[in-house]
Every structure is written in structure tokens, then in C-alpha cells.
Image 1: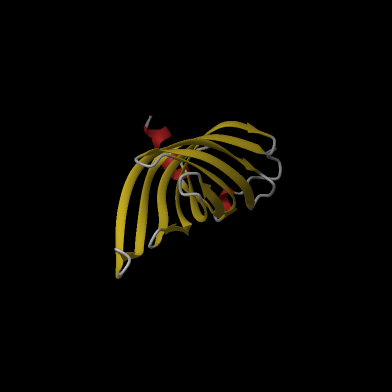
Image 2: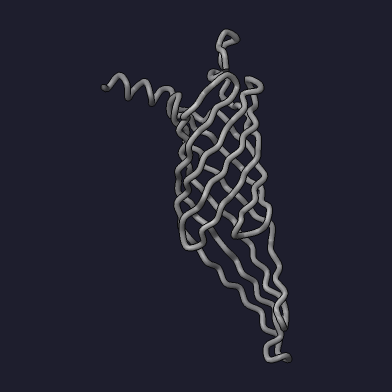
Length: 176
């Protein structure tokens, strides 16, 4: 048992960094993400990632409301299918969302009123995704995850990850 634990600890390392384009169904704006992929073993990866969504403007009767969001996620990927160049995984994780609302209105039609409200939310992610192993050094990927929490939403991501750990590069003889 100790040998297996030591082998898993030795195998674990950051193996990829990446970027992705996102879209959130509740936020209704595109976003950009940064990813790190930490390999625990051949089936499990920890994937911390952060996303910034573009601001969303809403016109109200006497002014505007501007919403800005960013999220930080700690997701776990579990590989369920690995065939040829395709890898499919299930996803579960934790979500932290920060929402900033800027209010710029004329109060009662005359007095300028400006305010900022910040709301932080916690949630759980569940979803699935896949990677295409097109090269030893980069892989395009796609994810779909549903965030359960105060503001439930479905988020789509399409991106690319780049290998940063040269000792994890597969041999030529390995058949992806």
C-alpha cells in the first residue's frame, strides 16, 4: 500500500497549461479561461482554472446596470474512455463566483445615483469533456459543466492545453 501511495505521489506533477473560450448560459456573455492540469495518476487529473467573462450592460428606465463576473474552479477529471487519439472524462469540482454590479442611474429622474454591489457565490461543478491527442505537446479540448449553486448555469469551454513537463511526453511507440 505504501509503495502504491509513493508511486502516485512521484507520478503527480503539473503537466499542462492552457487557455479556453467560454460561454455561460446564466451570465450570457463569452469569457476567457486559464487552465493548469495536475496529473495525479493515469486516470485522475486536478484542474484548477479561472475565467473572466465580458461585462454585461442592462439598460434600465433611468440609467444602466453593468455586471462583471469572474470564476475560480477546482475541478477533477476522471478518464472514462481512452481510445486512439480521443480521451473522454467526467468532471466534478468546486466553483467560486464573484459578481460585481455597477449601478449608474438618475434617482427619481434628477439625482445621480452610483453604487457597486459585490456578491460572492459557491457552487459545485458536474460535467464531461474530451481531449484530442493530436501532438505530444498540445491537445485541443472541450468541456461542458453545470454549476449547481445560487445561480445555476451551464458553461461551455473550447480550448487548447500545452505540455510543460517533458518527462511526461509519451514514447513514439505508445499508441494514443
